[in-house]
Amino acid sequence: MNDLWIVDNLKRIRERMNSACQSVGRKTEEVKLLLATKTVPVERIKQALDADETLIGENKVQELQQKYSLLQNDQTEWHFIGHLQTNKVKNVLKYVTCIHSVDRLKLGKALHKQLTKENRQIDILVQVNTSYEESKFGIVPEETLNLVEQLSELNTLNIKGLMTIGKLTTDGKETRKCFRLLKSIQQQIIQQNYPGVEMDILSMGMSGDLEVAIEEGATMIRVGTAIFGERIYPDSYYWNEKLSISE
Ligand SMILES: *Cc1c(COP(=O)(O)O)cnc(C)c1O
Image (cartoon, rainbow, N blue to C red):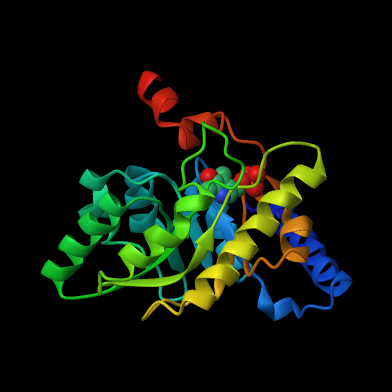
């Protein structure tokens, strides 16, 4: 049986995306919607796919693996948006076309080593900790150019842009600052002209702050709760390694 509310929620998200684009004179097609599906059962995800959504982001390798085996089809594209440990690299590469969370050279090198073995390439985004919160992963803004330059020497990694999680607060100004910072880092990287580096994707904005993100230049938003409902695990389970180990 279908929960029509998922289709309704999707419609509402598309409307929010449209009016945010309109408010700043952007075209709706400039912004992609990625379904953030952590903890969401496959039956529910399937309803979103039946409603013509095509882009899924998962946070944990094991969950990705399980869902992929049940939901995989020719239309759906899978991205990895969670913290990635180097020992999980080989597994994650079996399923995804883009990794949003590359935030250290060690991870880039681990990916490069495996991809070289498999004689292929992958799209990556560099995750930046624009809120400077200790609980968040991501490279700090000041070190991002340096990391991008180093990663650009690994020819199996197609650097496509940047990702961030905005500061989670009801103060829209604080969140906007994070997104503005990501945009300005993107501009600085473009000026450097690193060989092979593209900066077309800005992955930023979630259920609560997608309008602000779109106003500040997001080309991909990642939405979970506003489509699938509240999650049973706190986000710290996915975002903070120390907490997730002690669970
Ligand atoms: C869970 C998650 C999201 C979606 O957050 P919601 O507030 O549920 O929309 C986006 N990005 C990342 C990296 C996430 O882990």
